[in-house]
Image (cartoon, rainbow, N blue to C red; front, side, top):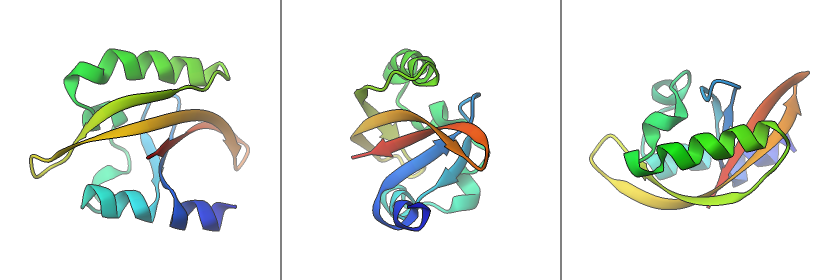
Length: 104
């Protein structure tokens, strides 16, 4: 599953503070950036300001085990922004609880 996830889906792995711990190849292509520029960065920095509160609320819900899809707008380094749908799901990976954010 891990091999397929990191090749086929656009996604991020987030810790309980919203820091990006993992990123798929597809997301790197979509964002036109490198892994080292994303790992350790807080995910909220990628979102348009209008979506910060919604995302934080949904992140808290995901930690409780409640998953929803939300529509947000991502901002990228070169001034580009793109609307995406994100589903946040709590997962266990390497004996840790994390959040998987799948983007479409």
